[in-house]
Length: 220
Image (cartoon, rainbow, N blue to C red):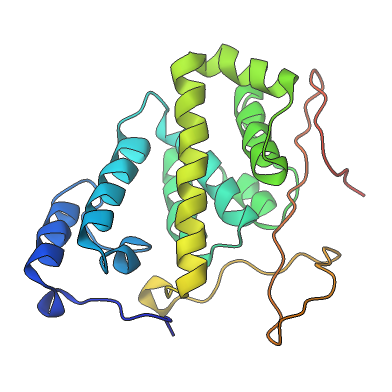
């Protein structure tokens, strides 16, 4: 159950309906995910949907690059809705089922090229540590250019905001789907002071990069 009301079109104010019409007439075609919560402030929802449309559909990044970074973000934050939607988009963009399953299970994925592997590792490091090693940064910049690496960083930040919104307000999965993400065995969050146990963030496995030194935890 969502923690806040989520609007149906017949219950929207004029300002909310205007934003809703802008959303469904754009490349998304439907109202899903965090924008359902953001509609409580129509101006926020409108600016949000414009930024999201730009970052997802109108950058120099390929759909494959964007969706790879998004599913890494979704797994890090355990965002069920984000994973549900974007794992399908990633598959459509050409990311293999085996690679998606590895990311879903926090294992190091076998991707189709060294550049994709570097993008995975860039995303993983930024989400895990809040920064990226010089080697990984240089590798991704060589592949994407300055504009591309700026866009990639913004995309990861945007979908972190998306994940937090979905998780905080418990926006439900579409189509009554079952949660696709499960806790990772051996990743212990430690004790919590909350009466309700909260899931920990998922620590993804470093990429296998023979020419680059990946940082972070190692696989066992």
